[in-house]
Structure formats: structure tokens, C-alpha cells
Length: 96
Image (cartoon, rainbow, N blue to C red):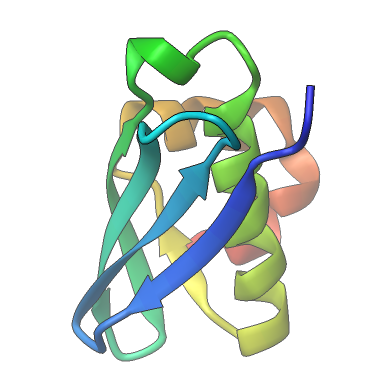
């Protein structure tokens, strides 16, 4: 399986990470809203067509990499992102 192409769509006060898999039009998304340097994750959505490939995890990993690089803090309102933070205590410094 090819890794999905992850893209950050940043519109200032809100944005999302999008995951695209070659050969399909389906798009996985992790949406967020921003207040200053704090991102509150809202939803992680992966269509059934591309499910079961670790897409949601890759979306969260992209968020974590960018948060570290940009100095962002994260409020994991999305249940998937909250569960990922529990599995990765090394990310605790990114919690707002």
C-alpha cells in the first residue's frame, strides 16, 4: 500500500489535514479550529472506501509533526485524537 499524501489546509481560524490515497477520490480529514497558537481538533473522518489503512493515525501524526515545528498546542476535542494522545504520553507537552 502506498502511503497517503497528507496536505495541510490552513485558513487561519480553521483548517484541516487531508489524506488522499492514489486510485480513489475519497479524502480522509482531520479538522481543527485555531485560537492564537492553540488548535482544537474537532473531527477525524476517514471514508469507508479508504478505511483500515491507518489513515486516521497518519493524519494525527502530521498534526503532531506540525505542532512541534510551529510551536502549536493542541486541545484534543476529537475522540480519536484524544485516544491517540493517551497512547502516546510523549506528546503530553503539546497539550494546551
